[in-house]
Image (cartoon, rainbow, N blue to C red):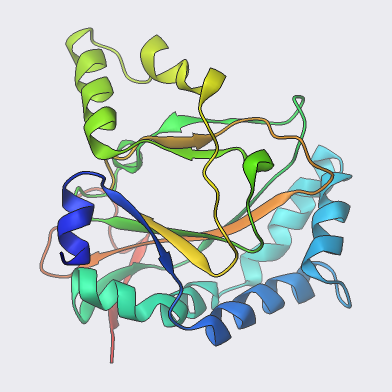
Length: 230
């Protein structure tokens, strides 16, 4: 079955090997060098986990100059993107590089689906960690059938992210992902992260893309750019 068929029906998300690890390694190395020269990824993760909130904010500002992260992520996964959305695409201008800190005092990412942020229903997301994620990683994804049932149930009650969805955080099992794997999912998939126990921060990169044959809706040229894939 083609990737697109698995992404628009159940399960709605896939864990796939990154086709071009040379480019993905380059992306990770550039990130590490910007935030901690002469450090490896594990050392940087430990340093981040000890930072105060103000230090984390300053560190995030440093990433604003990382303008080619989007292009590197696309190069690493362009075979996947091309199979799903063709050669003529809209791609997120600036990739999101996210790091989450361990511990109950840190911020959790509430269960959500990408459509809530104003992207079109034709957009797909790629999310890849810069290191292995095991049971303590805290990231979870619901398949499309379960996601849609919960969304529709709450819609009938006039709710968005009400008790049914928020209670997912209490006992949802984390998704295991290896470095070199990417999760691709559609904008209806509920996902988020819980508190996790570790001495290291979790770091990942995500990017959104869609075919240029589909409408963009709310997110347009401020968020996406035109890209042709060879």
